Length: 284
Image (tube, rainbow, N blue to C red; front, side, top):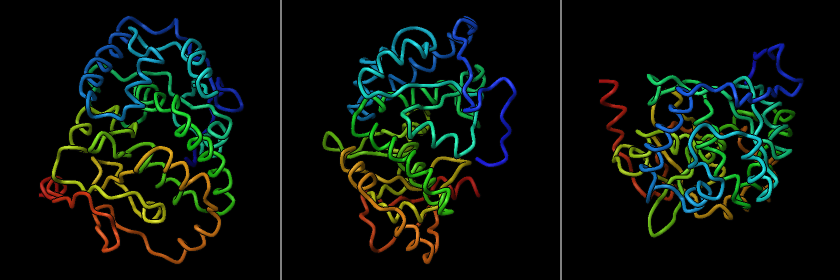
């Protein structure tokens, strides 16, 4: 994220105190309302690792989680921790934290009138959506490797390609599991509407995950996704990415054009060819 200026109250690494004691009863109530609604929605829809971690990390306890308490539990599982930041941070800062097993989270929570849509990630999106899978060893390794890869990508001028990988996995990824397809991406898991849309609606494409294909594919930031990519397992995602040499991949990608968000290619593994009805209806 370019053009961001570090607030004077933030440390050099952009971290700030969570100041958990300063949350108001109303803010805790907003978390509880979001948690109750979303955890019910995700039963039978989210990956087993996500659902299991909700219990293991005790995110079901009332109120916004205290990062210090949460980190004791998370650190004992995978060595990761959650650190508070003022909001969005520069790419380099983000990658540096991930590379050292620190996940950055906003400390603020949305207002009651923003339950269904928020432009900037808040503590519910960051903690409820992202943190559970950091308790899974394979996914946690992927996230750390992503941070290390991001630091390299900056020098190779390939941030946009790597950003697409994050978008279509960490934020909006689906996984084959339990004889069907389930949710693991935080952008879906923390959104009531997209939790239904991503799995049940006929509009979006659902395609098998392919690293090069994903890194060529544009994405939407203003609406639900037109295409979702489905991984076989977290271990397979880790293997395809952690063990890959991205430098030659970036060279290859530089000579190839971008793919539009709604496209289906002859080489794609098509699990569901979307109607794209949502986009047409919104344009109409």
